[in-house]
Length: 516
Image (cartoon, rainbow, N blue to C red):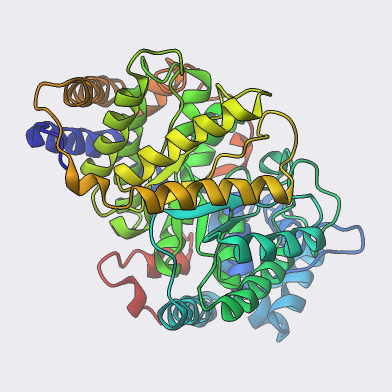
């Protein structure tokens, strides 16, 4: 079941996406951010909080910035502190934060920084191998993987709900973050019980949920994947914690935080590049979030912006060393249900994305924009969404919940979502092998239209530059200024002696897992 599309236009879109990202790659090579440097400290093992509850990675970076030493990078400063004081990593970091230890000109921490970076990446590699062994032994559910959100605000309540969802048939558990966490420039510490609209992303919370899902996976004889969010002002740090604690997926978008959280574009994209380098090494699937464009823009009129963004995201990810098997490019079932033949247009978009990115674990998002308090209507809407998902071979399917428009779903609501998906996926399992698209029918014509419009948009973005295109509201009908948004003050230019051995080691795109 293939759409008759022009492969030359697909190739043209990929060529254009390379032109779009090239200037930003040069920018990444000259700049770093406070979040990247805090991530470096966390990779070395710096953790915990001071007496006032301020994370030690933040304390160290604030001190380096105040002393005018941040341009050299956190790795070099920490190495110098370890060498000068003879202390362990945590104690040396605390000494550095308190007194600027290791600043003497004759002290070099570069050798220590490189040696310890190799050890830290070896630990990340071991975490990846442990997950791979579990997946190989237990196996995973068939695609589309059934992806469910569990986030009460209290990690101790999340865990039993996640275990129950796994027993009911979920393949992927997503713990969404507390409202606004993307806008705080530090990572909370420890197990948390006070989130609103979600649960804080912390290393301790990741660890607790990972252990619980591994235990229920052994019970079920099926590996359960764990997802969280690595976007916002702490994107690189959360990526480190996820890599260390064995998460399988991360929401790690290109433009979502810029458009919908008003985080500065340079801060987001610089942080994202380092995050994706680490995700590639750790074997973490990213979810890119283009589906969100259709919550603010019309799904029919602006469907091509989703495809164009996916091409750009694919290129950003590839430049960070990610193989297609880790690129969970996102799209959504968000067309107005009053649209005549809307189902055909949804099939066209879903099949086009699946076909253009054949090796990517595509993430398919449910209807939210047009659901209502009428739970029967919403349930039928979600049934059609599930039908399109199995028909077009989506990989990761976030299940729609019948009470989505009313309140945080109950366990029973998730159960009904799972039963709906099981019914449709089983009942139409091989439908795609039984049908073909009319070459000049509505579905094929719509797919060609979306591809043509995506190429036209990419030509414009390549000419203007991505930063200007975002300012012109080309994606999601939202405009963001290059010098606006949150976090720009945390971007800095690298000095002549800047050192980040993790970035250097992770830059081995062709054989990333052989580092160590």
